[in-house]
Length: 115
Length: 113
Image (cartoon, rainbow over all chains, first blue to last red; front, side, top):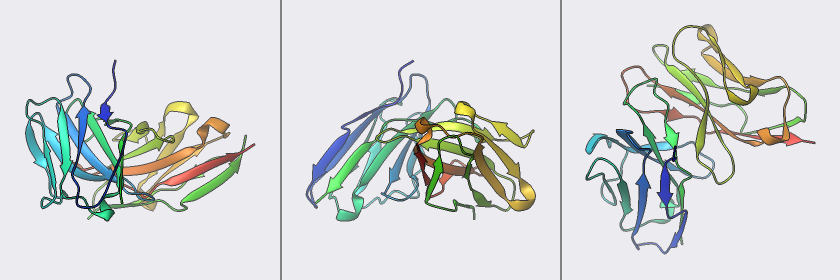
């Protein structure tokens, strides 16, 4: 079974530029999450989708971050314009059901460096 | 509000020694608890989880954790460390009825030959 796929793995941009990350969850997983992991910290949830609807985006900085999951499968996370403090690893995860006990399966992450 | 505290951002043990990684949670009701491992340049992988039932939970790679409600703890242990255990370990909590998974700040485990 293929895991969660993310691209690009690494991205370096200058501040005020834009960047987009792509995620393809495990086939059949209805729930998709984007987490931000800043160096030395644990992952923090940015947004959660159930199929193509947003379940929780309370921690998403909406003035610069946006995410979509148009067909309920792939998802993209965009940052525009980027700030220095956006340097982090962006992790995508998926789960079979939106359940408290359901395991989240994580991709390898996309590492963003903002100069 | 719920939170997770991992004591010790770095832990070093000798190969073959006991591994003990500490996790305490703050929650008004018993939550669901998880341990994830992250190897360099990889995503997070579930080691084990506690939801209900037996408080001693066994996971992959010989790890186990015990849920102690009275101490609000969920410490991760392994009797004998292997070199391959070197990684970052995250404790996480999920409140019943909630969508979010709250992670601790992580503990980096180094195994000394």
